[in-house]
Image (cartoon, rainbow, N blue to C red):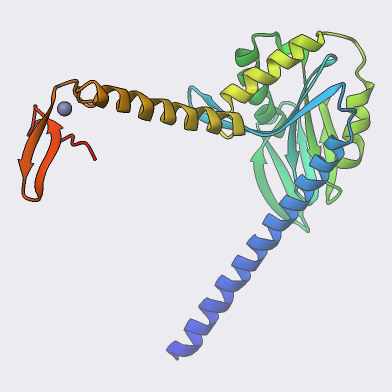
Length: 245
Ligand SMILES: [Zn+2]
């Protein structure tokens, strides 16, 4: 019965695949809800930066949202988990319980604390100027014992607006924004900078060639004869294979 076996395997794979798609979609929707609510913050007081990728000593770290304001730096970790969410401030792992099925995941408060530490280094300001928040969608039923800000999607914006003690000037905030954009591996600014760098290098190479120097090894460019006629190449051939195209 190999056909039946193949059929079963295909059905199981399809099922796994579609549940993965649904999970991804739900995650994207939950994420979109938070993004939309963040856009409603008064623009003159709050600068929102979504999806930041920063390098750390261990590699990279991804931060869902950072909200810069004169009242502090809000660092948001968004979780789109359903079921009961059980945990405390001190436990390394939290539990997601869906109809009796239990799944462990890293304490999101600890995870977000790592984000704060990375930003603390980058912006050179104390931990006390950061306000970390963990946000769960309505699909979750929070059974969490915590002194930290672990909130539902519906409540986090109101919570952000409650902070009114002034900690920074407007120009501090603009500086933080610039620093994050520059460090953000994924940002438009970083990509622009990269493209600009490449263009500058191309320009430098052209200038070197004009003055008769090889841009690869700084040797002299000479006229040489090849299979298909004469061409300009590096005098250090064959150790340098640069040719002018
Ligand atoms: Zn050369």
